[in-house]
Length: 319
Ligand code: ES4
Ligand code: ZN
Image (cartoon, rainbow, N blue to C red; front, side, top):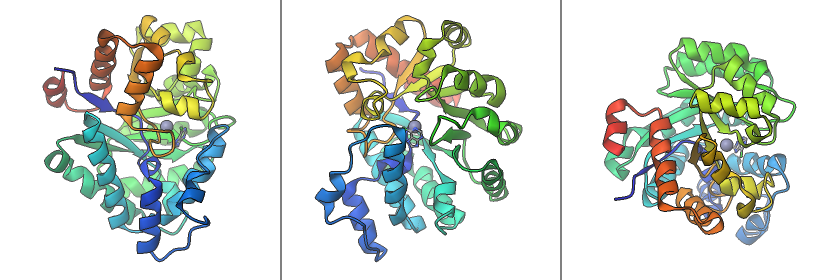
């Protein structure tokens, strides 16, 4: 039987589908700045990370209540379970909601309600990682982290996302040190659009245990050696990389070379509603473009389970 997959890099707000945007806007009695759903769908064409982030943050406006966040999270779990995901670790962006006047408790209550019942409802274990918006002031990161800790939110880790270039990991040294002191896992987006230097910083300054994306590590042989030697997993997102023009096409994606170099690569959907599919779609399309072998698929699946923050008992169940 095929090894189950853990999805380790997806943003729950990036699973907000156009139909759901319309449903939530109606429920919350909000007007959308689009003519109709086709007009909305016509905007899912991106030139780089920022052009995507603009739409991603705009569409989040429809998320207002705990029920909205619970529905969003359950819809992702349902779709992920159908994709063969047995364990999901997903990011959420607390700052993006609090800045719009949504109380952090609404965000956490909704997400954590879905997490608490994911095994029973969907047969998939799950965990949430709070992600810091690196293009916002460091002070905001410090404040939101303090709130999360004060509320004793059951998160498993702290992450770093949003516009990468010009916003190096080093800025967030203190908040990540606090996260580690709290016993949280630490990950960071690095080397998606940003230089290899940002991956070094994520490892050396933040103490990142996994690197999200990390594909630009290929430009730095010494960094590749470090990632291989220390078995630092990279959560790679093939369809995202093509849609955000990191690579021209899936056939140009270096995932196979990365595996051959001994890097611990995993396959993930990133923002599935925006980038053309969920984790099964990533495997299928990558398989078609690169001609992935069964052995390569199995390695990718096993890597994802091993690289997860699931308990040793849960990992043993899945491997
Ligand atoms: C993201 Cl693809 C990507 N990169 C960085 N930050 C993000 N937030 C949501 N998707
Ligand atoms: Zn991401």
